[in-house]
Image 1 (cartoon, each protein chain N blue to C red):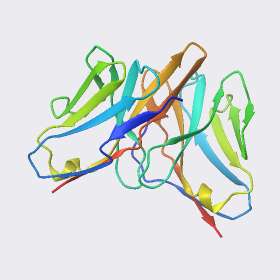
Image 2: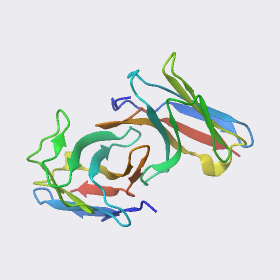
Image 3: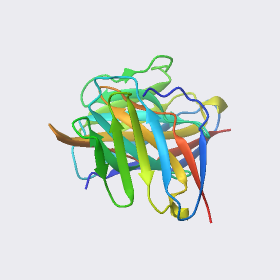
Image 4: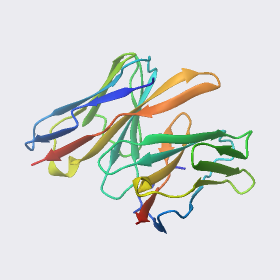
Length: 117
Length: 109
C-alpha cells in the first residue's frame, strides 16, 4: 500500500515553455504532499509543502510564480515549471504523507528528470 | 536535519562487511526519524524508521540506533551486498520534511 505515482519520469522541453509534473497517491488519500528538487550528487531540497485545498507553502528562495503547485484533490498534486530555463533542469521528486496519529508515514514518487534545452 | 545542498560524503565497504552510516539532527523535539535509500535516477525508498521513545530498531539486515543525548542516528547494514550501493538519507518529518545531506555508499565486490 501507500503507492505514489509520479509522471512523467523524464521530460525534455524547450527553453521558455512550461512543464507539468503530476503526483498521484494510488491507494490512499494524501492530505499533504511535498515537492523536492535534487541536483546531481546533492541531497533533496524541499521546494514546497502543499495541503489539499489550500495554497502551497514555499521554502525560502523558491519562486512561487515559477513553480506553480496545485493540490486540488486528496489524490493529486501537480507542479508546473513555468517558462522553464536550462537552470531549471533537475530531478524533481514528490512525496505524500499517509495515515494519522501514531501510524503514519511518507512515500515518494519515482521522480521526474527535467531537461530544458 | 535541514538540507543544505552539500555534496554527499562517501563510504566504501567490502562486500560482506557491515556498514555504518551516521546522521546528526538539530531539533531536540524531533520524535520521528526515517532512513531512506536512493538509487541513481530513482526516488527515495523507505528503509526503516524509529520513534524517539526507542533507542534501537531492527529490520531485515538493518538496524537503526538513536542517541537522543547527542542527537545522533546511525544506520547499520549487516553483510553489505552490491545491491546496497546507493545514497542513504536520514530525515525528520515534521511540518516541513527536510532531508539530511546523505551518504553515498559504494560496495566493493
